[in-house]
Amino acid sequence: MTGQHMDMGSASMASYLVPWLLVAVLLGAYVFAVLQQQRAGKQWSRWRTASFILGCSLLVIAMAPGLAQYAHHDLRGHMVQHLLVGMLAPLGLVLAAPVTLALRTLPVSAARSITALLKSRPVHWLGHPVPALLLNIGGMYLLYLTPLYTLTLTNPFLHHLVHAHFLLAGCLFVWAIAGPDFNPNRAGKYTRLAVLFVSMAAHAYLSKFMYAYVWPRNTPHDVAQIQEAAQLMYYGGDFAELLLVIAFFASWYQRRNPHAFKLQPV
Image (tube, rainbow, N blue to C red):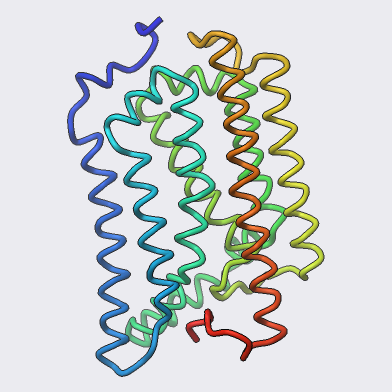
């Protein structure tokens, strides 16, 4: 059974340290930018900073050697990683408004480059909730209902690529639905709300399908393990999506009542 898995026990520590180093660089850049704002006498929400630290912390936990090894031999561990990397960490990272912070901190020329990138056609298209939904939920259907999951068990590059997709697609979806950063293609509130409920339904359907028909197929995992992983996906996904619903209505209320509370940093 384990012969089909990557031998994570003999894997180089670099496979753990590199992702942690990337997260540390990301967190360091964010904190440095916050300190720059404070030195300039400008305010930045502590809630935003705490949100970013929480998002980075969840990524560190997801990439910890113990959980990584567990995830490579047990679908339940993989599902915990999926929830942390693809659903919970993106909430913390995106709600921290890192792009807004960068625009306020970087030199004007660099800020203009970021703004131009946000207004570019590909980003403009990706910023709509429907493409974001297809990339986010579509990736999950592709992973668990095709041989892709089995391939990730023996191909380290594919394994890391899937995790990168989970993280980026999760961030994109949160940004399209409730992200506080500038979005040139932000859809109307009813469109975003409809897409959010479609996402919740699609996520729940996939987890129930996996439980009932024991997918992914042709893996070394037994039936009980797959069904418990599907339950983790169902309840964990509900929790993450509930948080996103709260973030959506909070941003909606904030735009209608901009002086009601001060979560908005700009």
